[in-house]
Image (cartoon, rainbow, N blue to C red; front, side, top):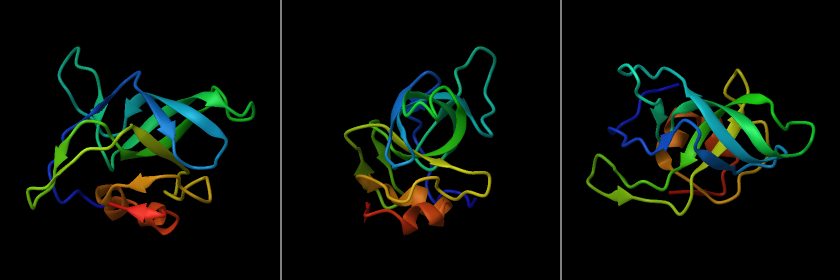
Length: 132
């Protein structure tokens, strides 16, 4: 997992519900923790595009429902700026479920994927249809 090229504005907090953008069987994910987040006391852990999170499947197939997975955030509603000054904002919050090696669980991703997520996780970019 590489570092990001720009400072990310975090737009996803704990208890945030995200759309699962792959075909792994999950439909809605709920963020429960952010990997590597170090914050002050009583601060809610937060994450942004390209960050690794731990989430539970809120709704979807009965095989995966209520299980905890690792996921990568590929889209966020909150606007963030890139290093070249362009501001990016998506219509929804979305994530892709990955395994321990960083490989996606699904075989295809619906919708656009942010360039920051592809920089950190190249295997997610391989199955993406659109990279913005």
